[in-house]
Image (cartoon, rainbow, N blue to C red; front, side, top):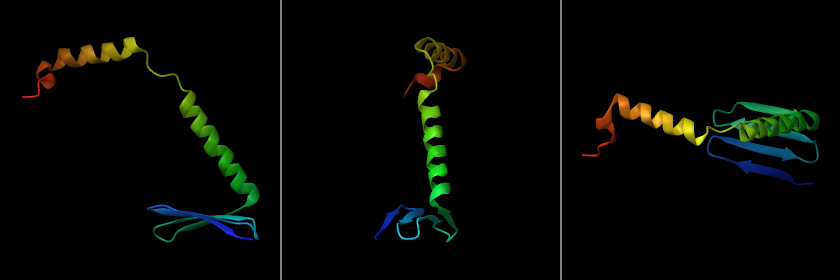
Length: 82
């Protein structure tokens, strides 16, 4: 069976369907090999972190306006381009 390989600038990811191993290797040659259970646990962790960051409440428009007003009070020249 084939291997699934994804190469990025500083890391590469590989899944070998025969041995059921997931390998992560960085540009320095450091390598982590996970079996299918630990690879699945890593994916669940990554998905939970992504959902947590996605579902965080964003700042309200009023908070952003207040921060902008505070910036103007401290240094009005900062808003001038030239």
